[in-house]
Image (cartoon, rainbow, N blue to C red; front, side):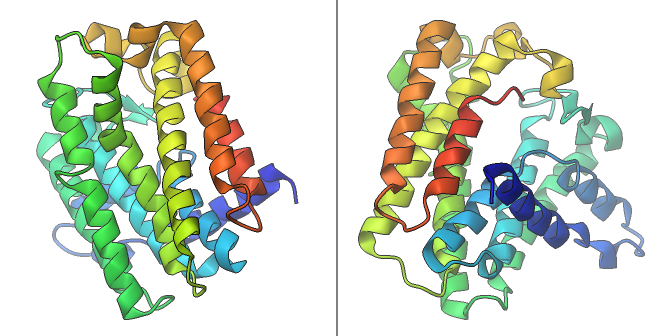
Length: 296
């Protein structure tokens, strides 16, 4: 099966798992809250993180299905982070995936609550999964919590805002983005291994961590490049906002030519991490190549 067909199969599984989320809450007096949650959750996107969860599970055991609830949970948590990231007190963005951001459509207070509720729903989805055993669900919750909290995304977002207006070096950018972007990508990969009924060997766990670290760095550098060289129509969100808001980015630090070199190097390192560690690394390698060349 081609990479594109494999990706679409994984994507269809994720979309099917998310489609009915929170429908049981839509008849209550607070129905606008699940409506706002679904608005952002079902807004589309590449679903890179849940696809990674599914495909790392498949790389280990040959099946994506055991990881579906974990994949849905990681996408819920990612969506919560996007809602909060777009708020006026954070990046104050008005467009996400080509649509008005949650706070633009529903108001700031409801967007805040929608993000809070999605974060809670992510852990509920993991903890209640019947595709995996309770011990695995507990480990999965711990992995996701570690990526989301003050040792992960929140720490990265804190530094990103705290250090605005201050010229940063590459090491400081790596620190921010390793937490803000890389932590959840790493969790997505490790959740796939955790969901697998086949136990990962220590070297496979370490390979997934290395893959995620290199992939996350390449992903963020490419993201910074797109804010300079893409268009709002292609990207689905405003371009040039990093420079306008005084954000420190790899594009500003290195320039676009050096960024291209770094993306290529990190992508190759990600691919080397999984070759030899898994019997079926081809999709993971092709995904790394695809993300390095993405235009949105």
